Length: 437
Image (cartoon, rainbow, N blue to C red; front, side, top):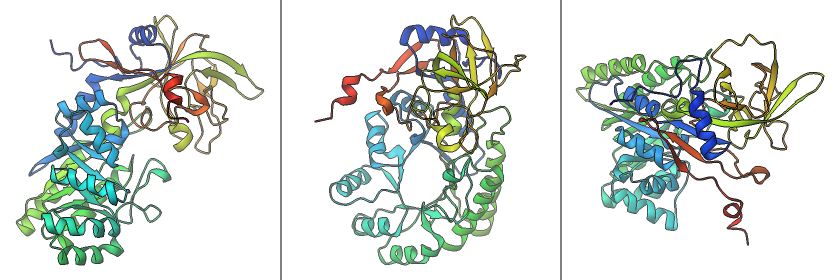
């Protein structure tokens, strides 16, 4: 029986409350809950993106490094984008072949780290240089071993969900800036290096129109500077819609635009370029939920507050970026979804969803300027569940989970056959302290 279309969201208004309650009874709150069917579907959607001469989809594993999810994504046909040497090693430990991994990083390797990088390169690891120093350090190895790294270009133009997620404009430092490109090309020529993979990534949650412009800009750069290029990497940051008022990117439309530009390049130069993208959020964000329990209710003269047992230590995105996440209020017995961001609540009750950390910013409902913000919802009871949606990306992999000495929460997979499977145990206090001496 094919259950690949089954997801935790029955529609865009109601989460499967019975599954939430069952998982909470089995594993305790708070915890992350991932929907395998959603992940597999998104992988398949990305692999269908139009391309004229071949497409590699690399999952940006910084979005979620859970071993179980990496294996699911690999099994669905995706390769991987790593942002550190440890991410490469972590992917290998999850069973990912090293030749399926591209390393694009701010790290600079010398000594033992450089030796490890070179060992991995000889085994098939792909590597993009992102600075002149990285290029100089790998130069002798590249010349002696006939290894050709890729190059990440800093285009001077970018976009992102927030200013801190823009990786392409003049206020960020990712990649070899256009002003350094001549020096990079001169060094490559002197050391017999051919840049066959050209990469640009402009930011996470990028504006769709600017993503299209990035395709145009990168194709122009390849035509002008990179006569031996074989692959064009358009990066990730493909816009996902966590909230009902947000617009997700149309990857088919973006693919068609890229395909047209690559075909035009072929007609002009007789060169066929393969295409790469590296989505992270688009693959896993809406597959994940942070399931918390309502601990308390308070109020001031200005606001009602609902206190939950998992806040910034399981989802720091509202505090870091002013990001918004859908929140579902589910009855404590799992019988009903009382309200959600996708449904209309007839209640006049509004509240701030606050966590348990000793920080005023520990709220899941924040304004862009960092102030707490009330949302309309059905009034929850103590013991009800507050389920934070859009938590599959940049939550478990990025949050300060040991703040206030809280332990890292477990992760649970809702499989395509409807089973609940523990994929990360809850951290113990002893594990938190094991390296203290």
